[in-house]
Length: 282
Image (tube, rainbow, N blue to C red; front, top):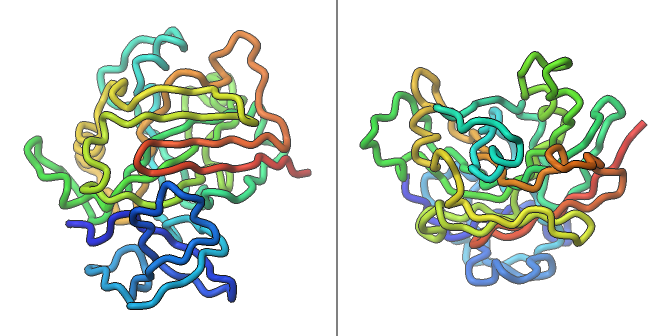
């Protein structure tokens, strides 16, 4: 598929009506309060993206996707992260799943249940699948299957990732409700260009924690998507979190994890920044 937008945004206007709009050249600005052209569509999966001829004010920026079937994650996909974890480079992409209810908006608070111990962040480039894909050949044109790219945080409760609790399975630690904020826009492949040359940064309470480039990936986006499609149907709407670079809390000597009220921001070049406050619940 060929995306008919540049940077797709989903938002509420001051009256509470939901729109899909075009962030266009304004994507670097604070989009809240901007007046943007809207599309005459009812979902991100429209076959065409006709402009409505109207504009609407952005009162609240929502997740660019209303729902997803699930998220896939790729573990240990940056050389620098493998080095900090003192783990060998994997021979194949390390796959795990995050359930559909992990989806969260780019600026909403993330509720952290008491059971989600040792809370950590993972800033990640996310791929949005726009067309069902299965058994993609080595020479397959992936542009037919990728709707676009967005910024994400693979929120992780590390207690449930350690072997004693998990048996080596990551999914539980990363699948609590709303543990997958993404946004603020979906950038089309044409507007993004090369996904393997993007600056990625993560901050906690304004202090930078991750500062790397997607060129540090072990398996690039194309290799990940092709590998995942073998024998598995990647449904339209699937979000693939492609891995995180070095700088996560679990690999620091002190291992001081996130606290209630901590603000985690993730920014990726050509896509924008998400900012989510961690709010511990009883």
